[in-house]
Image (cartoon, rainbow over all chains, first blue to last red; front, top):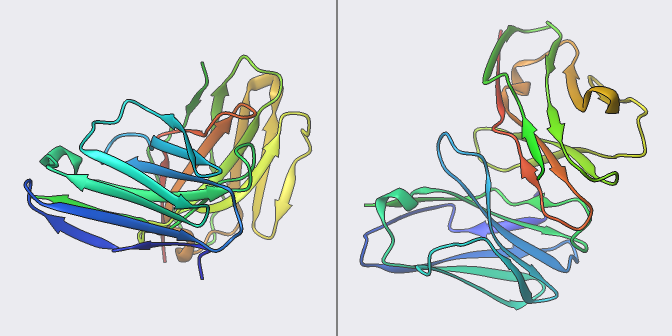
Length: 112
Length: 113
């Protein structure tokens, strides 16, 4: 059983919809991450939260909005996405930013 | 800037063969960390190993072994006696201390019976 769980595992949404991806970590870590994995592209870091404060935001479009209410939970709010946003979104956590990052199973997103 | 190159896009082997996945990295830092992750079709990235730049000892874990050579900036991964369950995409990654991971593009390994 993974220490980082993501829901939903699969999501299909229209371009005008609003949805959210949820991530929960059970490892007692204090840093959480969102990564995007598209076909034929390397894994891209989207956001980093350390101690519930966003510390990195890699030029992600505003249609993606992260939220970290506490050290165990991380959300990615999705609004008016484009078909090119279809990808696997991976949540991850680590104990302090210099330590090993552990990933969840990912949420497969399809924008139609 | 840090960079990770996995030149092998896809490798196909028959079960019980040994296979080596190559990883070459670039960094200006003297302190850094190297990682290997496995991604099965389900999507989850499974952590396999972390190695810091000051520890060049090779590591063996069951059928897995890693060869870290600073002189060639390489961190290669060998699976001995491969099995069908080893089929996955394998990612090499680099972290410079406090920075986040930079991943290679991954190598897809297909092990056929």
